[in-house]
Image 1 (tube, helix red, strand yellow):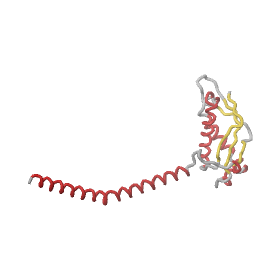
Image 2: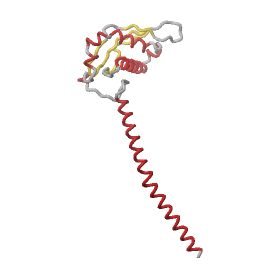
Image 3: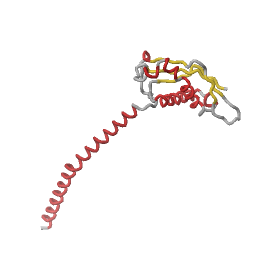
Image 4: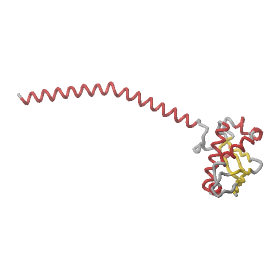
Length: 175
């Protein structure tokens, strides 16, 4: 009698287990699938927003035939951040803007005439970026890329567009 009573309890627990498993499958799994789909949509929306931001886009490859350069006509003498030696330091830079001619904002902002109209704003933005770096940093070849990237980000913010593809120094002297 004890064996059959244990078999009945085991059978009852198995039936309850199967019932709870069915509830789990039909109630929770569809909800989890919907939640997974929602999270996927949110991730997609965030990725699209990041692609459309005005920050630098290092993964964006532009064909060299579509790149247009604009050299700021005069070398700029730019004061640098204090370095602790109680002397004033300056950088003399000749700057080239590299632009993507296929960008939708190129016609509005990137032509030589349009850039010439705003050259003082561009130079002021460059001066503000350089003011954050000391003479030691400006002399360091590794910092040259950092400074160019910071100028690029500042110009993207100024224009609220990423038609400027890159910023390069054709000459950079520090004193």
